[in-house]
Image (tube, rainbow, N blue to C red; front, side, top):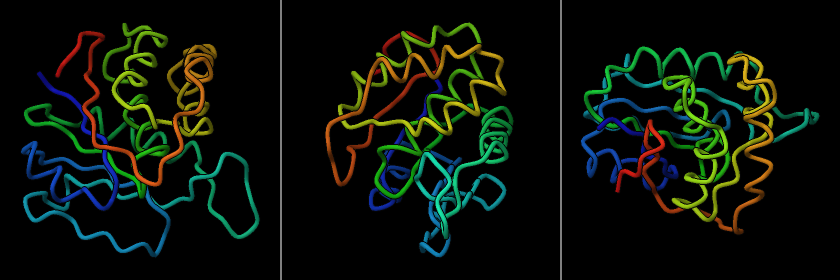
Length: 175
């Protein structure tokens, strides 16, 4: 069954190898060195640069609607033959938001609250970037349900780095 694997930059290569992933989404601050895993071809690697902030801040690149559109387009083009790895620096905020967004984009029947609760069950540190979620909610026509679902699960536990975890494309458990 196709699924997403969320991890930090430090665990990118090990996670790709362990799960046999051939598709990777990188959400990271510009000028952060990221070496693409050798088994992932350039056309199967989406690399977006922006800061993990929720409000525009001088000198920083905030998440934008265009970033979310790129994530959704990449997810929709994914052949789902192998897992997709989605990572950011810590594997806590940008990547968890992108996995949640991608799952709903690929499976519009998913209930936002059920998926948010499953996200929390799988990662106690997950704190999806609410700015990314807000753009996705608008782009996917979810009428605020994505934002409310993420707000309901609240901020995750403090962590410098999240543990890698699987997020399924369905509400069913995939362990």
